[in-house]
Amino acid sequence: GAVVSQHPSRVICKSGTSVKIECRSLDFQATTMFWYRQFPKQSLMLMATSNEGSKATYEQGVEKDKFLINHASLTLSTLTVTSAHPEDSSFYICSVGQGPNTEAFFGQGTRLTVV
Amino acid sequence: QKEVEQDPGPLSVPEGAIVSLNCTYSNSAFQYFMWYRQYSRKGPELLMYTYSSGNKEDGRFTAQVDKSSKYISLFIRDSQPSDSATYLCAMSEGGKLIFGQGTELSVKP
Image 1 (spheres, rainbow over the protein chains, first blue to last red):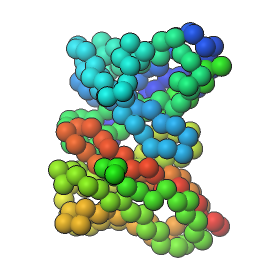
Image 2 (image 1 turned 180 degrees about the horizontal axis):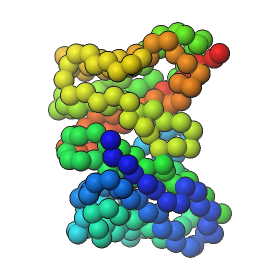
Image 3 (image 1 turned 60 degrees about the vertical axis):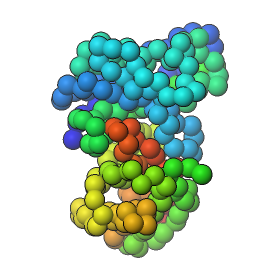
């Protein structure tokens, strides 16, 4: 399966600041990556689909101006949480797949805590 | 009604037991089904991937899909304490994954 590296694994930031999370596909070129959010004891909720070279597609209810996604290369997608607030504290996870309806492989996740 | 329903547990079993985890779904368009294992504070790890009704076996794990009943299962034989984790079912719709709530499993030595 694909190897996905996510960085950082944990970050604490002050309210009002921005945080960038990186997702790298290490062993194949990913035209599409997915960003999920997971609250404690809850399932993964898709936030957005990151498309290489074009704008990301956001799920309903996800603020695109708050969660900025950049997919500038076939191996790297970034998620920037802008003007973070305590309610943005969560576990953020990216995934890559080798095509529609194939298995998805996940990064290690990033635990964001906004204080 | 959620598209994918999964009993959140928690489920506690003794070591060596057979574990049965289940999900039901409502969208008959789902064609691809996956089971993931997630340890605390880690990303999900793919266990099984199936795309048709029937059984698929991999070591101690067996995935079962019944499309007519919209029901999928994961069986773990000879469960080990290291199997203690949250198990998530997922279904693919056009490349997007729809997850169940996850079942928290604890295997006691």
